Image (cartoon, rainbow, N blue to C red):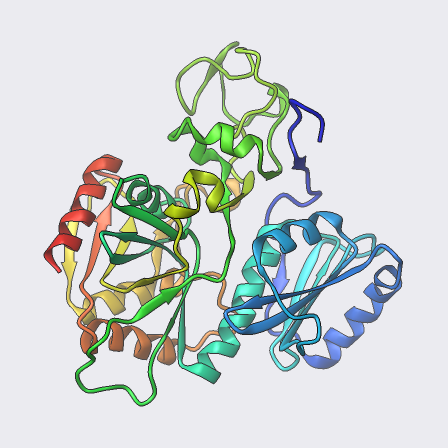
Length: 397
């Protein structure tokens, strides 16, 4: 990469593509036949990753996906058998960008799409399906952080600020980052009547696949992002989604960075991403791979709910199961921004949904392990006020 250049890749599909998560084995095999000609080329690579003990193999002819995959996951032993397989084929003629998952084969297929976000989330979803059944493990779509040796898990729909709140803890002198997107919580078998040790949340990723728009709130991240790998970062003012007059920005209501001589903007497109190694943020001393589960925080963003509500176990489970949220810019199709939708357990990555199992895991967490749960409304108060509420709750326990 040349000095002053950005390591950025523009994907043809810049968001998730249509997918079928219940593809039959016969249909999956038929579709895979379509992909085989391009996957048999010399440019195809096979890479094994270890997601908390589940080995998943990616076979792809996309250098972009391969590079992000290698950076994001822990590398598995090449001789280890794969529990699941992901095929990603670019250049399949006559096929629209699409994605397929076969539960029976524990395999996924991406056709003509190399947007990493969907590939990453389906890898997590496949591992979740294996771990839930084989090792009593709850998979959570959430951020995890450590503050004075106490761990917090922040669960929220996309765009409500879970990464922002995790970063507030991380940037405190007493805080450390674990992950910003996913956590595995394993329950002992048999379950003790009176647990003597806290549950532990472990993250499977070595890097943070961050929404690049977070740089607008944390200016210092620009330097970090500049030396990381980007996906769909805007490098032309003409491609900006948020212009304001000739030289302004409707996101920051300040002067446009392109008018200030910058060659790219991290918040000009709502779904651009940056893959950042965790230690590249504030050093390896600010990173942990697991945290005790001392507090669970749910987030929502609206203009009428209370700023904070402490939840009883059943209330928390009901909210999680329902998964109601408002679609925010960058979190879905533009025409749906501002409308309400539903995402059970606030987890769009689950490929094999088992609501009874999810409810059982969360019930054990809240009722047997007595982990407190609160819901904060980031739409009625600032980032710091919500952060102070989290710290106060951690200090209580």
